[in-house]
Amino acid sequence: MVPQKFLPRMSGAFLRTILLCGLLVQTAFAQQKRLSILPFPAVYYSPETRWAYGAALTATFRFKNDSVHARPSQMSVGIVFTQEKQSLYYLPFRLFLKNAGYYLNGELGFYKYNYYYFGIGNQPVPKELFGVDFPRIRLNFFKKIYPHLYVGVRYQYEDYRITQTTPNGEFANGRVPGTPRSLTSGVGAGIFYDTRDVVFFPSKGIVADIAFFNNAPFWGANVLFNRLSADVSGYVSPRQKMVLAGNIFSSFTWGNAPFNMLSELGGGKLMRGYYQGRLRDDNALLAQGEVRFDLFKRLGGVVFGSTAVLGNQKDILRWRAPAFACGTGIRFTANRRDHLNIRFDYAIGHDGGNFYFTVGEAF
Image 1 (cartoon, rainbow, N blue to C red):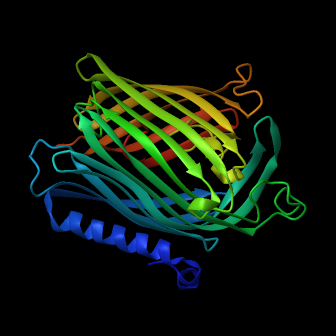
Image 2: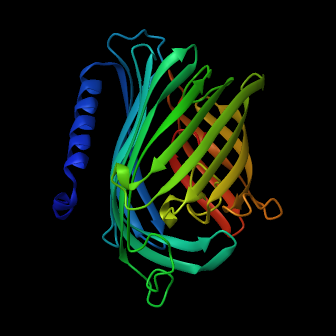
């Protein structure tokens, strides 16, 4: 449930979007076929939250009129609370409709949370804690126009309000772009290409997601900027029970983007080993690779590494200042039919190591 104090701040458009997506969720589960539900506990500790606790459910299913061999759809819902009175409500989804003739993905969520800020680009600052409240809407709708090729439209919305700052810090002194509030609302276009043999744990094929966004007052934003991004992954299996996976991610931003909408790396998907947002600038380019292999029955293992460079609107990319990370992990196959894994990783970056515990592969 969305906190009551948040409801008055929602615009009519936001409420209509929530209602529309709620109907979509209801339709998805009303027409489910061979539904698999994975309950997932959320318990962790971090300095900015202390103990966090909650739960998530991940549902994997196919629509009623789809072939039994159709790509599986996935939807998750999660709620997390922390000792610091923070809360997260999120609903990410990936839906393949009409035997993958249409592809819809995105996220709905509300976050009341604390994060660390490390500065932007090559101007780092001492680690600084800040609090923020924000709703998030991300919607991407694609139509297949050729085998494996989709084109579509995108929408994103965030109302990012800084609620807590460190005395005499960067936020308190107004030196962070986009504070104390940034309202982003953007529309864009995209291309999605997918030849993977399996969605959740592919052993061959390519998947590419290319996007352009325009955030502007015309769409309801209070900032003006553009972003062009590409996320491309490839998979090969050189021998039985082993997969080599590679990923290249790039993001280029120009205009007056707030700090939370700059290109950023870190977290459980892009540059494991770094705190999410530890690497942040106008532009980012990341390359990462994994070796995935079976261990015993449902258990598997991975080793991985990554490297990245950042840049701004002047120098584009700073090739002489790369960042590196590496790590290893264990996989447990929770859904054998679609090979959906529970993932436990440990990765080391410049600032030390980080653990990651979640559902699904990083890429």
